[in-house]
Length: 106
Image (cartoon, rainbow, N blue to C red; front, side, top):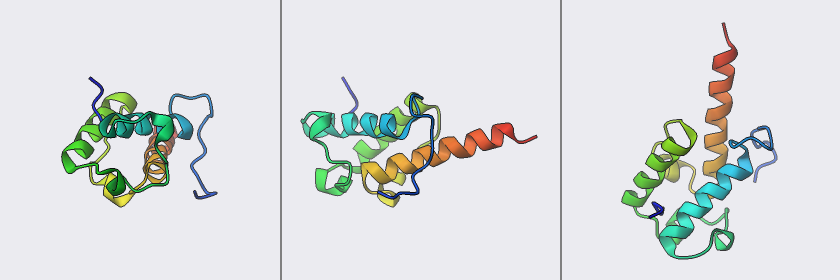
């Protein structure tokens, strides 16, 4: 079972990367859609998670699945600090960019 669960200064990621902003948004929309019983295409990336009725338990599951999917820590609180799919995706993309910068520093 699937664990259900814009700003012009968006993070710049390689578009075809599995870590692209659109891939992250699509994945989160799939998680939210699975929790609320709709297709990912019917989930609006600018609608607050609270309007979808995502609970704290579901937020924790999405964060845990996100860690497995993307290989980075995603705090369940991130969904309240970045309360839409669009904002959360940007937050995750920022984490990727930060990790990439750190890996190039000597």
